[in-house]
Amino acid sequence: MKKFAIALCATASMMLSVNLVGCSSGSSDKGAEGADSTAVEQAEASDAGQVVEISTDEYIAKVADIHGNPLVYVGSQPCIVDFWATWCGPCVALTPVLHEIAQETGITVYKVNVDQCGAVADAYGIQTIPALFICKDGKVTPYEGKRDKDSILDTAKKIME
Image 1 (cartoon, rainbow, N blue to C red):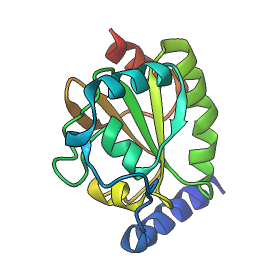
Image 2: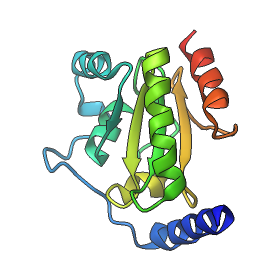
Image 3: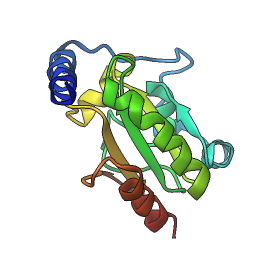
Image 4: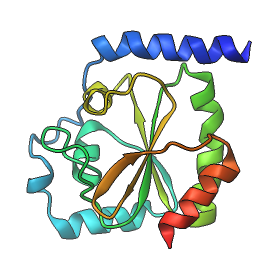
């Protein structure tokens, strides 16, 4: 049953990656270059140690400019990005683990719903979820480790050093 659920998530994700529509908060069209660095730092401080679901516009302001170079992290504090969907069982199961990790380490976890933020998922070629990315030192890189709490916690502790 577990293999079926994972295969279902992977198949549905691939189908969605073709037809996803980008989400937007509708507040503005400016990218990361238009964001005030002080405002970004204040937003990062308020998000620290939290799991925060973000829109495409928020992703561009806090994480990376998907219209420019999506691999350049614009934030100053390390974070984890979780690409997920409500219909994905493994994604839902990972959520409480990410909450625990955020609380234990103080790292911010940004959740990007692939059904609502298709443009962000497309920028990284997301085909299976959950997909985690680590953002630190100006870089956005895929997390390649196991999806269990201990493995993710170890990585979070290392990037917070």
